[in-house]
Length: 331
Image 1 (cartoon, rainbow, N blue to C red):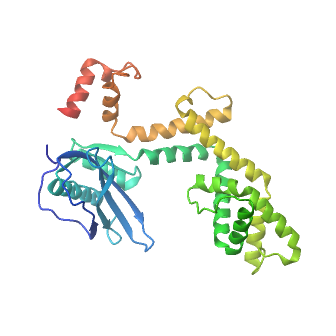
Image 2 (image 1 turned 180 degrees about the horizontal axis):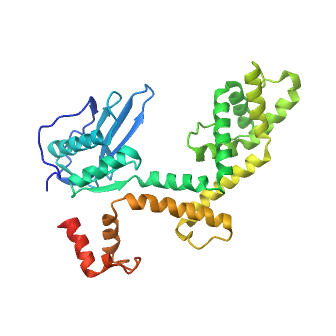
Image 3 (image 1 turned 180 degrees about the vertical axis):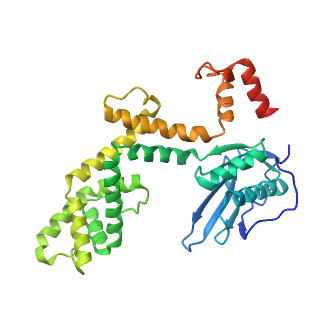
């Protein structure tokens, strides 16, 4: 066992924070993950992590967090950082990286593509949790789903407005205490935003009735003209029955996607459903065309429950084609 890249001088490109456990992991195989984000201090950070079944029940271990704020965020630079981390985990922990995974967008995908071209023994895998998000996004971007995106944006704006108004939050908390309900949360993801609003609907209805009872002494519609206009708009949104119906259908569709996505093909009962199902299929085909397909094909073929039964009668699934596939992966 050895690293898939040759060990040369160990140079770390850019400043980094290195997190190491006190013991040696290896020798074992592992998956290298990388992802980036902008911190609250507006610094752009890249994290490199490893996961292996031999280390504390598949826990993720951080190898390095690199501040690349002042560096060019190119695929070539990310590839250099990946190679550096692969060398580091082999030299220090005796961990052999066999798979690299990252986001599928732009420079991240290109960096993995070039890395695998240079080191064919590596397997390149996408973040498939991200792929599911993209599938859902493509679903709601279809011609029949735009109405849901419009109201999900209004829902996000409404939650942001609520969270910026301490008086409104305090009033809602008092109402929820009186109702023996849960405390207010601070959702960020669109799905949790919608769930939070639907959970708050009864309390918001009570809030509206209280505000109407105050008349000119309103505690919410106050301030300058812009603030009063925004507050009136948000209170009007609470009374919009179409919004609540749309948000409820939004959640139902998410449930449908989760429970039925395997059997979507051929299940459309209308032109509208067919167009949205086609959007899902097209979205799934797009990442599949870019991924390291050989690894997934081999995993299915070697599974005794499936072998070649799920596949079409193509040359690559003949004995000669499969032998070529296995030699490419393990030869």
